Length: 351
Image 1 (tube, rainbow, N blue to C red):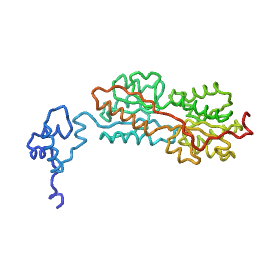
Image 2 (image 1 turned 135 degrees about the vertical axis):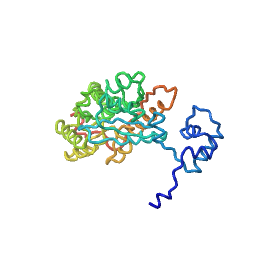
Image 3 (image 1 turned 120 degrees about the vertical axis):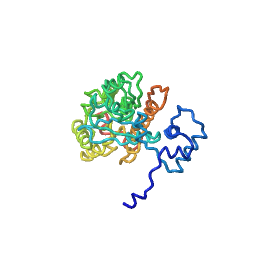
Image 4 (image 1 turned 30 degrees about the horizontal axis):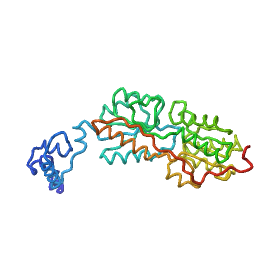
């Protein structure tokens, strides 16, 4: 009780105003970084020095409420039973960008309805969103377009006009992976790719991967087999095991999602296959994870951190700029040769 009675009250903007010799309104403009009101640099400096001298800290929540802005961006990352692994690089990339602009960052994995999505904006829970797991015809994109709310997508739609997006070219990567294995001499190649339901729902990346698979099958003189699997270690294990059992002569494997590739490595081991001597693998995975695998994965860098970072940067630019122009970014996507590919065993070439 004694401590409470003797504790000094926290300084207020009125205290800062008295010390700086200006009005409280002027203090408010300066401490909230309001540049629309002309205030001499000398006065601004005096106010900041007064605030520092008194130990005044602006109440961020109050500022946000008064301005009508939350200084918060939100990533919508749907998560269901087909995905037991969430790729944290997307989150850390977006969070880094938000921190650099003194914004808060939120993540929502729960399913959204039209009402709940609109309420994020109407209820001042966020200033803008980053949409993930984009579909060719995505109702979320259409809804936010119609209501003129700020958003960016990681991925692409069928109609990308006036949209801001960051993406990688999944279809090119999958086709190039098949081509590389063919050039090494592989003629029996499997594909492990995203869950079938995602493709059936029109998710862009799974559609692109299956399209590239069909094109590669038609372009090269090869035998192929495909499995669409849950994004889990168990899903990868089961899918790879099924490919090895259905096509015993398979010597090459392409994966469109490799964060849970440990399951495929284990399936190869359990079926007596050495990587890469008996089974070459090319996948799409983050560069850091690819290098940590044993053997290190040959493949394409998914650039998840960079995609999250760039998407957030674009969103923040749209929120902070008066003359924002939509940005559409395809990140570089080149094959990096590591340790999981080689020429196929001589006894299986041409089988």
